[in-house]
Length: 308
Image (cartoon, rainbow, N blue to C red):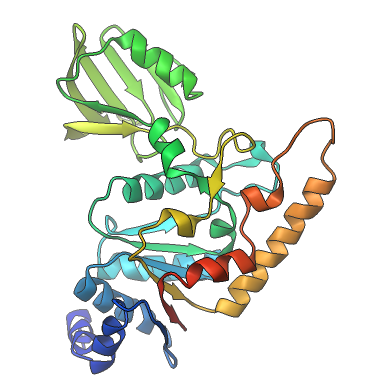
């Protein structure tokens, strides 16, 4: 039996139709007996039929990665997004992982841009970390379009404000270079850096390019340059990822009880780390930066929820 045959069977299943009917009323549903890739086929059918955004939560990164791969095969890599943790121990800002920060920023940017719905795959450690608010992200996003009239000096100063580092050649997110009328900048919201060419004070062209070959990947009309969303962690207001996503999002939770227990375990560790911090410097409290089980369950009630 081919993949398309299996998809067709799930699409025609009356149980899929029943589940879809609960979304408008934001009801809570349960699914049992799903084994192997069954969940991926169910999620695919519901996503295609409902045209709603989905957030699928697993108890650990390994499970999330397994289903991420499944869903990318069934749908596409553009509409299936991975939202990881930033690999940071509580209050250890320097231990972030740039690749994961990039993935987190891509997801936030996709939600903020109000493009078509996507399936977001995540896990306990990732949603445990609260995120920069929409207002803060909007304020710290530099939007450029071909034809815009602005100086290279202005972009240079803005990128310094965003804590970007000026280098000779960009190789990783958070870097930029200026050569004559060309600015290369590696935003935290895109897999490849951007090359912005000016004619006088006018943006003449924008394209993304490959770091290794320096060859163009895609010609673009407009871009958003986003700084490290995990920076200034102790200064900016933060909110739960559930506060950030669209209110019509369907939550699919693999094991609510286990997810909640893990959130509390992580929160206890954050409290321990907070108690060891120097009292001479003011630090944000754990509940301002991190999510516990009680906060998660309370906020989850505002969404359509499918429990496995």
